[in-house]
Image (tube, rainbow over all chains, first blue to last red; front, side):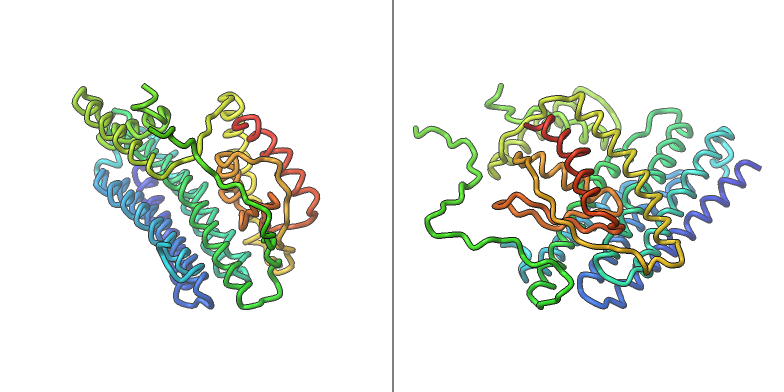
Length: 93
Length: 135
Length: 162
């Protein structure tokens, strides 16, 4: 019984996170300006990190943690580079 | 999913509760991206997910794995620390980039630049570290 | 000692990160992590980071809990604003705040605190006039926000870093 509650909660949490990723993707595709798209990308990777962690709990596998860490790292670097690019037109000054 | 039945009831319930709160806050935050009308209002929305949203999901993960494996599993702390440090940086950079772009395009709804014209005889002290003494 | 470990706290933090990632504390792991941390900090010196130290740990810990409470409170506030049907009537806007703090680490910490709290974001710092420009989602009275930032965070951060 309790295990079923946990299974369903994980499922609901994953659906909520996927909906959140949908909102971020909409903002990324729709714009209207470049900074809105970057903001969407930023939100998307944060949500993806969380989705991977819920998959980790669902399968009791530590492996998902590593993927979540790498997405968090790469997402930060890419958003920072894109924001820098928007400001000056160059990534490295 | 037999392993889900292996944890005690209170851990399962707490994990479920934290996951739902975290995912719900994240969804509300991302929904704000659709709802607000200007970029500067939208930039506030994702902070919900990247502060408490991530926080709750990570607490759930830490609690679950610590009990399941009967040892302290705290490597989620790394993701927490990473998020705390990186989210403000990306948002600040993005805000500055947006402000800069709006100013160069001459939009009226952003405040003008505060940068003063530096007179030639004023020397701006640079942030110098302690120079090593000449050998 | 100082020569080999110019930033002892940073070195210790890097070692802790290494050990947490490995999920084990063995003599070999500590040795390898220690050597790597010392090398990494030496490489950081090439960037010439400004000097600074945490002077009052107690105030810093209290500030951390204060910030956590504020983050929880503003999470609720911003969630209400997003879900409220008439959220178009908000009064979002920019605020210019003069600062007395000069320590670069204090300013960095203040920037992180302000931006991590939902509803406020740090947009610009003017290093000549020492003012910061914030964007605030629910801007009712400018004076209240200036008092909050200066009295609540800046005073404590100056105690910690200056």
